[in-house]
Image (cartoon, rainbow, N blue to C red; front, side, top):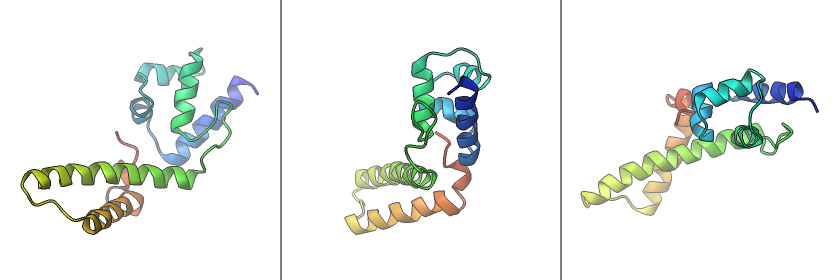
Length: 126
């Protein structure tokens, strides 16, 4: 496989997911300049390739490791857990914490908002 072929696969996946270079750099813990260099086809470290492909659910060769729907679902759940944990922590401090069932329902509702609702545009924002 050539570098150009890998780059094409990675760009394709990035576009399918709707991730910006800036968000990809944050999620992969790389600098925006490094991500820009990668997508420009410049020489980058192998660890850079690995970090970028991992975030996108691809292996080192650009092959799908996690299908796109599962990747999106996992990201929505991760973001929902984060948002709900912030609310739950604040509520617990005020002695108004929610029960387990209520928390799970809130997580599911928030996840759905990231998948199909008003928060969809923020799914890949870090």
